[in-house]
Image (tube, rainbow, N blue to C red; front, side, top):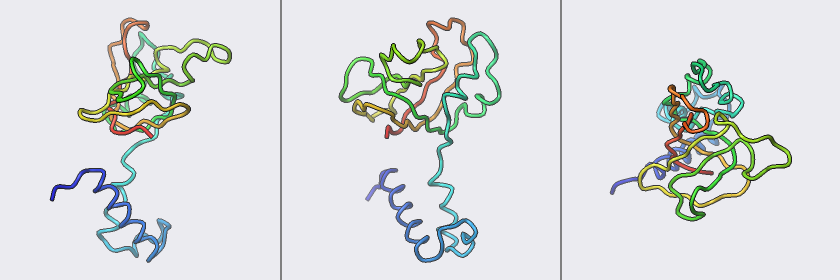
Length: 162
């Protein structure tokens, strides 16, 4: 029987949860866990949290700062607002923005470093979600931004939208 990555991650999470009940849930007691359980701990936290505050540091026309480049090619999770491009169901790409779409009253217009183009991984789709969402996937930083109105600075190859 072939297992899916989601099934494996769920199984690992269940194992770790059960292990924490039997031993201790603090890192100080991780050494008391079964070696297999302790070795799986890093597998659950594979996404680095990235904020729009950091993404705004990359100014179009300038060299991307190290604070941004350290996330390039890494698995990240970013919180923001979903802006659907063409449809609200079975979405394979959308824009993640730092503020709600169509928010003309409380926020100045978005800049190119305040949006992320999100492409769902092949075979995965999502549905439109209102409010704040969390996007998880691999970040790609465009280091050759020539036109701040036409070029995409950030792309995420998305694994899941929460």
